Image: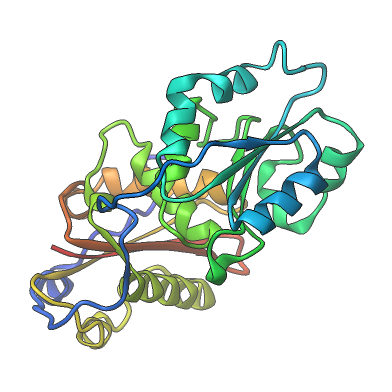
Length: 296
């Protein structure tokens, strides 16, 4: 990233109330990152997208679809081989939901899917995507995409697949931001706590507000922080913006890299937090605006 890019640091007057507000009670939260006893459910596989979707709906499951690159088959595709590894399958089997795997060659079905609006983040090429049929709030929505074609900042790594089953229930933009944080080489800790719906909604709202203004910043933070009504810690917020014209995952990775350049931001992103929320939104200026909100 260019050295003169503006990664906004917390202004001195802003730090006072961004880092010093104590709040009152936890909002409803998704306990995705806490331990829960679950009964492991074996992965169901289908090479027919329509059938896989039907099964996912019937089982209230998560549907993972892998679209191979041209000229690759199940015999020579490294992602197919990875999804068949017992250690990888174990991660999915022991997650909190049933998983359906569907692997497609680069054929008429996959090409039709890649031209749909919901899969525009796959860069019109091979990759993986997840459709959530397990949770009512996200039913039938694409909630994760992993393009295998290189972007400006996001380059697919096999280890990214292992992050999918541990992501909390949330939208594509929320889960993409969390994945970008978790895949960072420094292994930040801010997403180890509770994915809190109040914090995530606040992050969504502020990202949308920045995108509408086309201006990054901690706008009206003092009032917003007082409305969070969380318990037992100090409210913190980080913001960042991407370069113009990038896709979602490039922008998520870009924003995390931007936070890494700021000691103040990185202390919040890297540190252990009791609860967190992340999101990102694109403005009409083609810039993506990211927000992370935490309670320590």
